[in-house]
Image 1 (cartoon, rainbow, N blue to C red):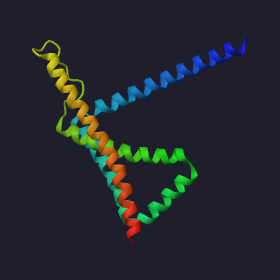
Image 2 (image 1 turned 120 degrees about the vertical axis):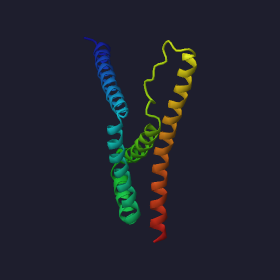
Image 3 (image 1 turned 30 degrees about the horizontal axis):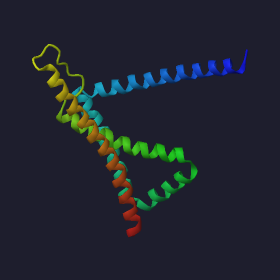
Image 4 (image 1 turned 180 degrees about the horizontal axis):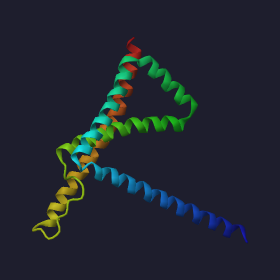
Length: 159
């Protein structure tokens, strides 16, 4: 068997595995977003993410030098670990902001406008609202990371 055929076979297998893992991630993501339409699960999610975010902020405020030292150690060990840490901080801010918006707009996902008068107009308006909420959640996640880092730098430099 020529090397080109072996390479093509390996690439096809890799692409198939990658597509399957992407689809599994998308299904898991959709499952968790849909779970937030249940008010009690939303409040539980908000309490968990909010308390975790609060603990992170509290640790930065109370132990800024230890957090700065831990950040230096992590960043010296591995850049991927640093990226994972930043992604976790972003995710906490993102999901907290998104859950707060879901309290205000409980019908944010999967609203149907089929057969309604001006259904496409309402669908477009709803899609725009959903886009704005996701954008605000993204900004909330970015601000969480930036303000945490700025707060730690300020507290370490100020003491």
